[in-house]
Image (cartoon, rainbow, N blue to C red; front, side, top):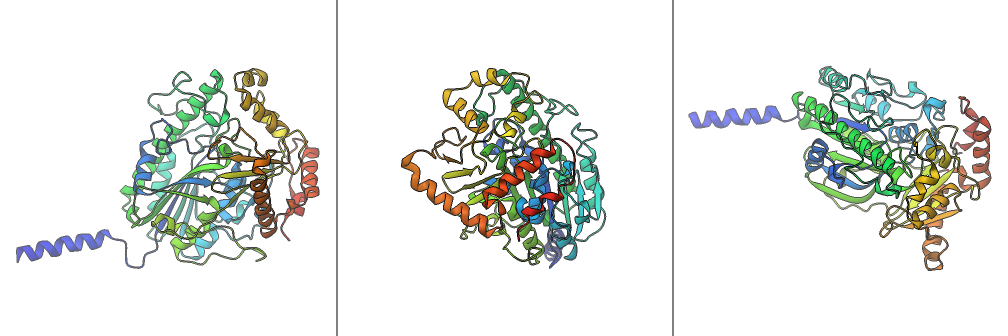
Length: 486
C-alpha cells in the first residue's frame, strides 16, 4: 500500500509540473543590438556560457539573416514578417521613417487576438508606435549608456507575475550598440584589450585601433551574455520555462567596417537560437533562415493562421521554423534575399542581394556613384586613425575590396565557401558568368514577386536623390511612399 501511495504521489507531482492540457506555449523573444554571431557557441573565442547553454538546449542556426542591416528596418521586418520595401520602414525611426500603414498585421496584434498577454522591455524603434499595442511596456529608451541594466530582469519578473494567460515577451538589450563600453556593473569580470584579440575577420584590417574596438565589442557581448543569464533565471524561477519557447537573435551585425549598414555578411548575418519545449537540444541547422520566419513561427506556437498582407497582393516571405527546430527535414528555400535603402539621411544607398548555398550576388543600381555610407562609416565619428592609415595595414586584396565598396560596380559576386568575408569580386570573371546570370535571374524574379519597385533603376535614383537632397534634416518620410508595392 505504501508503494502504491508513493507511485501516486510522484505521478501527481509529475502531472502538476506539466503545462495544462491544451495550454498555448509562451514566447520569450530576446533581441540584442548591433551584433552578429560573435558568441562562443558560434566559434568566437569569448566567454558566453549562458547563450552557449541555451544553444545546447535548443537549435543553433548557422545561416540566419536579417532583411536589412539597420535597427528600425530589422525590427519592423521581424514584427511584420515583411521586407522593409514591403512594410515601408526603410530608414531609422529616429529620422521619422515609418511603415506605410499602422494597420499592417503584426506579431503583437495577432498574438493579442489569440489571447496572449504581450509585453516589451527595451526600445521598440518602429513607427508608428501605435501599430504595436503591447499590454506591458518598460524601459522604452534605447539606453545606450547602459543605465540600471538589472532593471531588465526585474521588469521581466514583474511581467511574468501578471497572470496565467499565455505570454509574448520581447526583451531588447542595448549591447552591443556603440559606444562599445568596456565595463558596466563590473561586467565582464575580466575585460579584454586589443592585445588579447585580432580584429574581427570580416574587416580584413588587423590595425591596433581595430583590435581595441573588437576587444570592447567582445566585452559588450560577454556582458550581454550575463544579462541574458539573469533573464533566463527569472524565467526558470517563474515555473513557466517548461512551457516557453525561447528565441534569441541579434538585430543585425556589428557597427564595424563592412558590418552594419551594408549587405555584406558582416551586416546581415546574425545569431539565432531557439529552445522549444519537447524539441531535441544541441542541434545545428545550416538552412538559410531569416528573421522574416519568426512571425509565422510565433503564429504556429500560438496555433493561429498567419494573417494576409495588408493588400493581399503578395505572399508573406517567411516560413515557420518549427519543423527545423523539431529535427525534421522539410523542403526549404534555396535562396535568401537582403536589401538596403538608408540608415539616416547621411547614407542612402539602394541595394539588393541574394545568396544561395555557396554564391552571393549584390546588386548596386546606382553603380558608378560614390557610396555615401562608406565615408560615413570610415569617418572620425567611429575611428581616430585616418582611412589611408587603416588601409595601409591591409593586404592588397582587402584594399581593393574597400575601393570597390567606396564606388561599387553594378554587381558583386562572391564565393562564400572560399571567400566568406567577400574580398574577391568574381562578377567580371568569365568563369563565373553562368553563376552571375543565374543569380541575376533569381533576384529579378524575387523583386517582381515581392513588389519591389526598385527593380526599376530610375526609382532607385529617385530615392537616392530625394534623400540626399534632404541632407541631415529630420523629416517625415511620407514622400517615399512611391516605393509602396502596388
